[in-house]
Amino acid sequence: MSCKFGCFCANGYVRQSNKTDSPCIKPAECPKIVTTPICGKNEEYLQCGYACPRSCNELRYPLPKPLTLCAALCKSGCFCRNGYYRAANGQCVLPEKCCGSNERYNTCGSACVETCNEKPT
Image 1 (cartoon, helix red, strand yellow):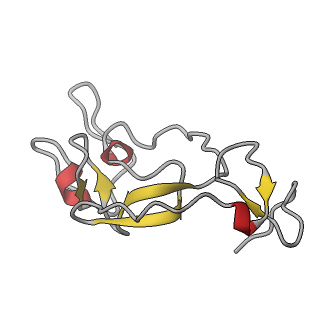
Image 2 (cartoon, rainbow, N blue to C red):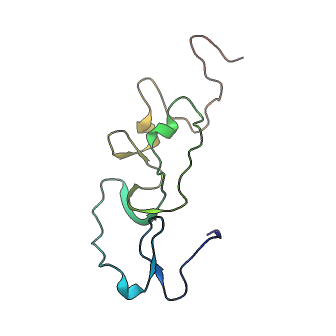
Image 3 (tube, helix red, strand yellow):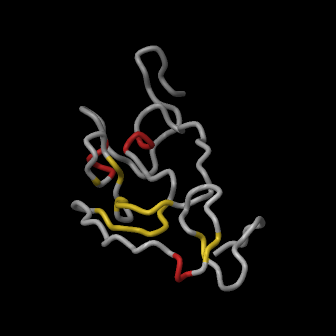
């Protein structure tokens, strides 16, 4: 776990939620927790999941993708299990299933791709 600088709740207080500007309250003031949702196949429920979860779009051409800025805050919900990516249809799939027609997943592909106009040297 890494250290972060900023404003944190004082001893004896907890953050009401993961939302920006959420107040610090006494644990007894916390709202009743709703039961954990039932997640789909290859998903798991996380209280503090990554704000920008993995999707098949990360693996699609062109590569590499531009960096996206994600909030440092986490969010709760159903996330794809480790090693799976969110497909366009919302399902969590293995990376091999992210590829389109006539494509194949490769863990170490070439940065210089052959196109109709260019052939790598």
